[in-house]
Image 1 (tube, helix red, strand yellow):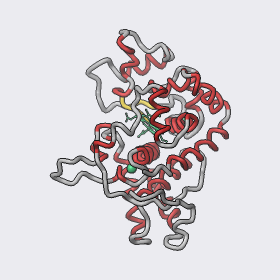
Image 2: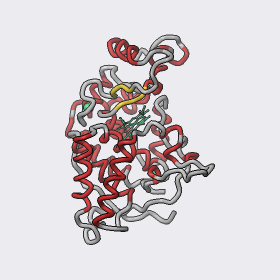
Image 3: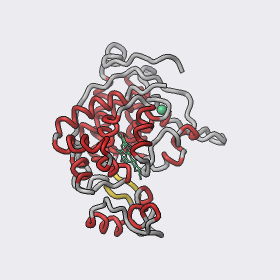
Image 4: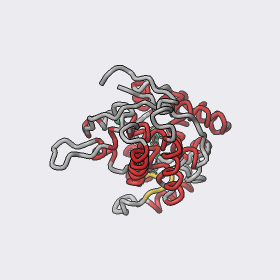
Length: 294
Ligand code: HEM
Ligand SMILES: [Ca+2]
Ligand SMILES: [Ca+2]
């Protein structure tokens, strides 16, 4: 790819002035009909930006018959919900009908992610545009570029730093887990056999542990079951995620770790206390994540 491109809020001001309204009509409709489109699309944006920058590479399908799998067919992306892809496909179709050949899918994804944050009760912020859609999408690029639910704080900080993101960005962006759901396999080891101890993770509230064990048996459970990240307000974009971490109500090991490590604990406490501070920081961090370009 070429040198860093300059993104700007008014990139399409002349070529497609109604862009944000067009995308907004689709996102608000989707949010009404299928609220999980929100978390699905926000996660899609994250998974696009972390793998070779925000270039829409997550949206490309594997060429039928090809041995080279596209990103979306990588193991780490198998559980991205179809509703996220559908939102972008619908928005792209509407935008193409009014502004043919002008707007990148990567920009539409950035705008849609912002819309869904706002629709769920989160902050509204300006989205810079001007991303170009990439042509390359390889599943082999995915594992080393996305964090896993059992990552340590060291591993998380290292990965985020490699993307130009700070420790604070890590804590702020993890706050996206204030909405959405995860499958049992992402945290089941915490419930029964934490690090080979044959005991649960001591950093889980006993009542949450009991509830999670009911949804997620040790083995043989339904692999389609999902549970909310935020036990208090799973559909509302608020700062409850952070207070939950203080109360040992984090779902993934990587969530709870933010409250256990001295480098991130005080940030969790600050955002748990101050919703406005979280919202402002989230808007800034999404802009930074949306500018990753390699
Ligand atoms: C910090 C490291 C992170 C890890 C280890 C992580 C891991 C995960 C995992 C394992 C899931 C559940 C997938 C499933 O079982 O279906 C998930 C869901 C989700 N993640 Fe993250 N994530 C991280 C950061 C982020 C960031 C930075 C964002 C966005 C800014 C984000 C947004 C989401 C959303 C919205 C969902 C819910 C998706 C849905 O319900 O469809 N995550 N994440
Ligand atoms: Ca990408
Ligand atoms: Ca919430």
